[in-house]
Length: 44
Image (cartoon, rainbow, N blue to C red; front, side, top):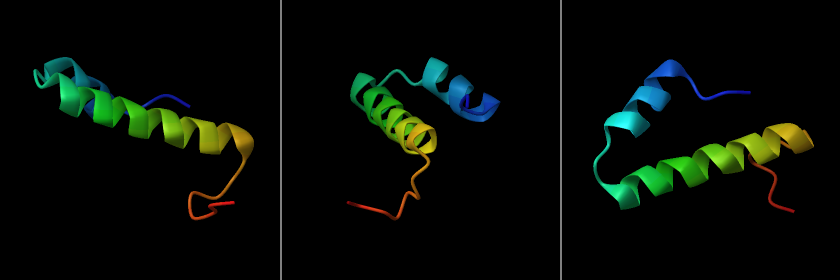
C-alpha cells in the first residue's frame, strides 16, 4: 500500500516540516491499520 501520487507530491512540495510530519504520521498509521487488517474505526 503506497500513498497516492497526489499525497506524495504534496509531501514533496510542503515546506512546513510540522505539516509534512503530521501527514507522514497519518499515512503511517493508515499503513499499520491496513497491515494489521483492522478497521480504522476500531480503537481497541
